Image (cartoon, rainbow, N blue to C red):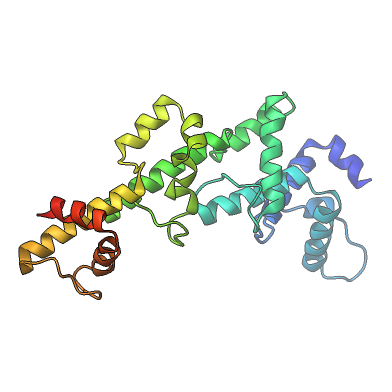
Length: 248
């Protein structure tokens, strides 16, 4: 009978969808289904109404609306709705989001649902969103540290931001000229070893200008790591000569 009511009563069906969405957001149910519930006996009406409402959502709740509610909750927490299928916290939600993209491509998603998703800022092209997110992360990193040399495995900055996937031969092949230009514009580092050597050489010049020599202590608070770098270069005579020629 309840399922028939959902099918034939649009007002009731809308309320069930709204209640399902609220459930997906782990919110207290605000949708009132009490007018559809009749009570016989001395049971507390408010308590029974709440219990029956909860059971109704469990039995006939709209799964799509439930996921939409979960997506709203994800947005509130993360600031975007690009849920990955690899997200361990939201594996089922990530799969549902991917399904919506596929459904729209083949014309199986209604205009009403497309508008609902668009209103949330739904990401229809995840790869493009991921790329723009990467660029934004890189710009933020450079703004904070003055360069784009992101340490691999950084907890604060996502692994992908290091750009390891982009520097290799396969990565360069996949990149369009527009994307390469975009990376160049934000100061992307294509040759990390060379960049780091140049950084160290600059520090060594500063050290020499201040102290009159290049005998950097292994543990130097002003230039951490520089002393070790100098000794590593000193291991190879050719590298040693070239380096100090550039400094001197």
